[in-house]
Amino acid sequence: MSRATRRIRVRARLTAALALAALTTAWLTGCTASSPASPANGTKPELERFYDQRLAWKDCGDLRCARLTVPRDYAHPDNGETFVLPVAKAATADPGERIGSLVYNPGGPGASGVSDLAADGGEVFGAAVRARFDIVSFDPRGVGGSEPAVRCAEPDDGGGGDGGDDAQEPIAPRTAGDRSRAFAGARAEAAACVKGSRGILPHVGTDDAARDLDVLRAALGDRKLTYLGWSYGTSLGTSYAEQFPRRVRALVLDGAVDPSLGWSERALSQGKGFRRAVDDYAEHCADLAGDACPADGPQEMSDLLDGLYEEAARQPLPAGDDAYDVDARTLLDVVTDAMYSPEDSWGDLSEALGEAADGDAAKLAGMAADDEEPAGSHRTRGRARENDDEAILAVSCLDTPHPREARPYWDALAAADRAAGVYGTSSVVDELTCADWPAGTRRPHEVRAKGVPPVLVVGTTGDPATPYEEAESLAGQFPGGMLLTYEGRGHTAYGRGGSCVTRAVDAYLVDRRPVRADAAC
Image (cartoon, rainbow, N blue to C red; front, side):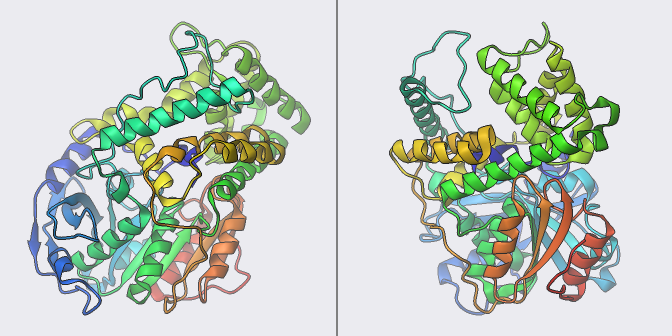
């Protein structure tokens, strides 16, 4: 996935530091042995000790928490190196009607599943699902409370020079000097992550995380996996289905990532998705923002945005003495972030853009600061700090092969500029760090999951980050794949797309009821 997905929002944020401290205390306890769900065959003897774990659950606020140990390198599982992963569950209130566990991943890559579950206790799931399943999530290898976790040191200058205190990094480097500095800076960032992560970067990819998911399935005591993945979580679910097709009970993939796309195709797909979403915002601003909309029509709104980008590129927009001024990249981040949940964000975005056009970017700066909250908020107290940005970089770069030389990026930049403007060029520039990343083993490919039961893919027609076309493609790649269309705006559908989506997904998860070929909500 493009590094522009660094800012993919998990569906909820933690609201209490006490819950975080309780989670950490609980998962730091141990595991005991003997799971009844170890695979009967196809597992190396060296892996049996991992599959034979039985989770030792402890109370952690309203949840139950444990930890799972998995091999760091599945090719050499007996070398003594491991990841220890936090796991949390919201137990069903009716154990007598329990089907099993429903494991989910909230997205990213880089989102903490444990923190996400603590935020709402699984309430995002429909009542029918909560009544029949324990809701379970975990921090994937390298993410959040994983031990060890991906860490990036402070990058060196990278050879680009400091450029002075007022120098700005352009959204789309066009001159030879800008491109040289951008590529050198990206190489320095990659080197800092290699240095800070102490050798774990080759082992944090999605295929290994999917193998961890199978160890978790066994440790939960489930013969087959019931799973829901949002956004990046669809990549994790797809990898699981390819590696363990006959261990799938039910699989929901919402906000699909198409595994057949290469790095530049994926960046272009996402750039187009954001371009369409911003155009939709310009056309319908008044519908959701009302009087806060700073323009009288689509063209006026587009002109206002273009003018702010041009002004911020020349000199950051002034935000007052108490905030950093807003440069062009920060403005872009705020605008694209608001496309994830229009019903929650378009009003604030409209007010901020209107005030910035009048010379005051303080509200834009405040929105940017809110987006950066995970780095130093109350959510980090009492537990390992979250590493969303570092982990999304690590997993995304490892999962998708990238060119080592600079020329292909500049070629892709031109195509993305023509197709999606700043939203396309920023997606391509975000890929530069991957040029110097440790090489993974995955390649773009269509799904290979012979024997998997029917998989339900959910696609939102106005999804900016995982465009609907990718959901159509992914559903068609699975044997017997089903596509549920949510005709709406924003990123992903289940939990925010209304009762129609909830009923269809819940019926599939509980009863494995198929959806019809043209199902739409």
